[in-house]
Image 1 (spheres, rainbow, N blue to C red):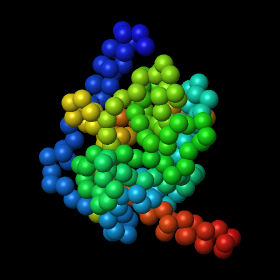
Image 2: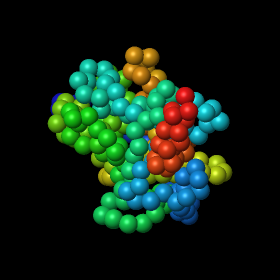
Image 3: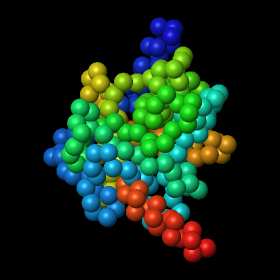
Image 4: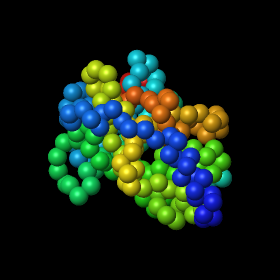
Length: 217
């Protein structure tokens, strides 16, 4: 990548970085909507924290000139794809707020190298967006090295998703932004102005409930 372009993209990233207040708070167990602790490797849907029963989960789609559905979107018309949370270099344990995490979808398109989440700088919008894949999926695109985390927000099982840089530990929240109806939802982006709040739903429980509702129709 052109050194000047790389410098500009790095500056754009830093303008969206802040320190998460939760980093200074005592860690606590992250729980799902049933009050059960999130566990390493279990599957969960991520939904917006909303009283609206029609909110949807997170899915993937093609954006800009991408030939592969790599960009993470929140879609109100879609149940979404479950995710798994992994603590690097650990195979057991519950998930605590502020813990460095890897997040990955349980499904991926064949064209994606990996189902793990990452942050990339979109060449069209110049914003830091959440996607999946590996180096071969982002040729000519700046990707950002770091870890995701979960931060407590408000009361009950409501949280925010964050991202921290590997090089200096600075962190930002994830928010939603709509760029056009043709994209099929709102992109997950790094933001300090409009973070969105989420809840975690056990995928096994949600899938059973969805199947029961479908059978009743």
